[in-house]
Amino acid sequence: SAVISQKPSRDICQRGTSLTIQCQVDSQVTMMFWYRQQPGQSLTLIATANQGSEATYESGFVIDKFPISRPNLTFSTLTVSNMSPEDSSIYLCSAMGLSYYEQYFGPGTRLTVT
Amino acid sequence: TQLLEQSPQFLSIQEGENLTVYCNSSSVFSSLQWYRQEPGEGPVLLVTVVTGGEVKKLKRLTFQFGDARKDSSLHITAAQPGDTGLYLCAGDQGAQKLVFGQGTRLTINP
View (spheres, rainbow over the protein chains, first blue to last red):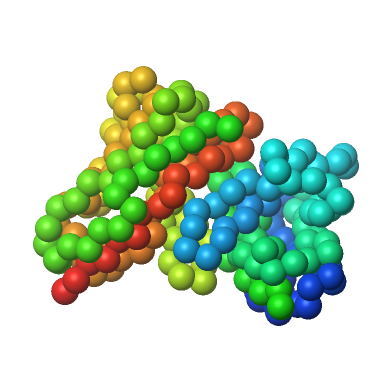
């Protein structure tokens, strides 16, 4: 299995500012993803982080708001830009394991926007 | 986007009882995964079912994928307090882009 770490684990930010979340995997992986989980709710896929090319965003999510980088096969960042209280959520990254059918998640970053 | 309906959303039972959680969709998925999530942590993969009609067992947990690959169930036998948590089903829309059900918050009372 892949071990995934995220930084920061939590943050409190003011509206209008931006926060970059880092995701580090302990081994090279082909696919990495970013999800959002609002308090008490399920997970929603934001985008697929593609190594060496632009991320692929799901409906309702745009690059200007959630720019994503993936410079190599073990690392990705998600930036939440121009934050508003509605962006308060848990942001999780995930990676596909050696098997196509296995996906592993990081512990999440709990973001509160005031 | 394909949708997954998970039920029940909340379940509180006594230790030793059995329970079943359901995950239903009108769409076909290439695979379906079950996760368990503890507070403050990311989801942890329990099992992946791929073939229609497939049954997988993990100790007291039994997972089944529907014949048409549109639905799945999780059955827990003789539930224990350690089974308490949020259970999530997730269907693969393709290229491992997962769509999650709403989750079942399970509480096992001693």
